[in-house]
Length: 486
Ligand code: GLU
Image (cartoon, rainbow, N blue to C red; front, top):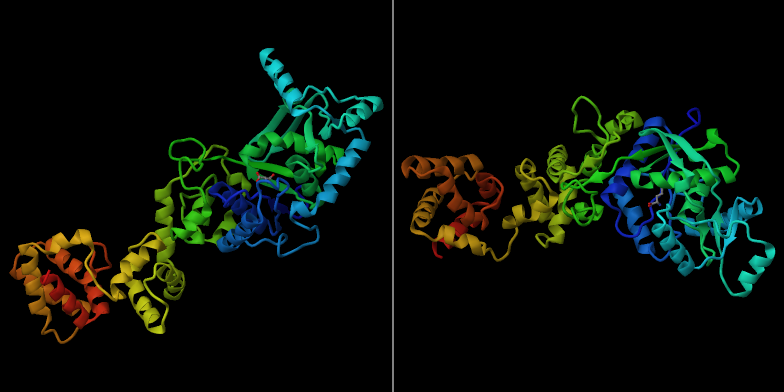
């Protein structure tokens, strides 16, 4: 299908927040579409209505938009081959299921869950590969009528012929499945609702999808999908090209899941990771831009992304690396961009309400923390000393400023700073260095540590002298005096 214009789809079944693995797939689909000048389709696979909710669908849309993975066809955007939500396409799947029945590619199966289980048990006991044994494959009309009169609701099953399915996966090379291990499978449930295997294959054909890039966990469903393509009349040159992306593993080398790591993309969003950092980092999970590069922009990703550079071996999720990349992306922000990201975090943490005055102060303070933070969620704790109404030293830092040595430092600082006429970080630094370090002979960590706690209330703060300049002379002196009085 190489000559056709590329059409790739991201087709999640949102049964919760989209997770890191979903987004890695979405990102590769998006990047592949952008790299080739193709179309990025977003399709919601919600035929399993017991697990996919409207709320999760709305959240998935929001997450993709937030990440900047804009789709060309899909929910809210529309497109020539819509609707792009499977629950709105049920008549289409019913039509094809009926056609497969008529063609004798599929058949009604009346076996009950209990009967199937009993026979599977027998298969296990006999050491036979478990799976549907074909019992209803060739039922006579009379037999079907008898089952119906018993009130049994049939499923529709696809007939898997003997033989094997072989296809070339762009990442894994030639892959073969012996049909001994791909038994006849259900297309439509007893209640008439379609299963994933039917819906996904029908949609990929009708939406003219040329490339299916998706997680490795779906590799084993491919022969069933190919069977559906065949029943729809496609020949091999009409199948989409498959590329199954490697698993994402946790630090413990098992597949990344809720058990061994944070998987929800929303968690990363709330923890203060930038979308560009998430995308940059996820791009490295299974793909590499070459030349040992780790930092890529979204633009570069679209320029450099090729499936040839996707590895087949599993990728390991490394939070430290994600944090490092996030720090880099934060440092690369312009001041106005940084301000835009910082304000919601400060408001949500009730550090500011959002007045013009507060925003001006935030803007003045951001440059001094831009080099220091790795996550936006660190901002409120770093800057709250500038905004608190009832300033108080953090409980566990009080002891660090109430001993005799600290009191001496604070008293001397107050004495040196009170007459300062110019209140800038360099004049503050010069005054404190000459008195505390040179004259009192203290180590900078000890001397400035006490002043830091007195002024900011915490051991963690932006650079001290800049912080004091921003806070202003009278507040700074009042806080030092306050600490002295503890
Ligand atoms: N809807 C499927 C899932 O979320 C993926 C479909 C596909 O990419 O083929 O697992």
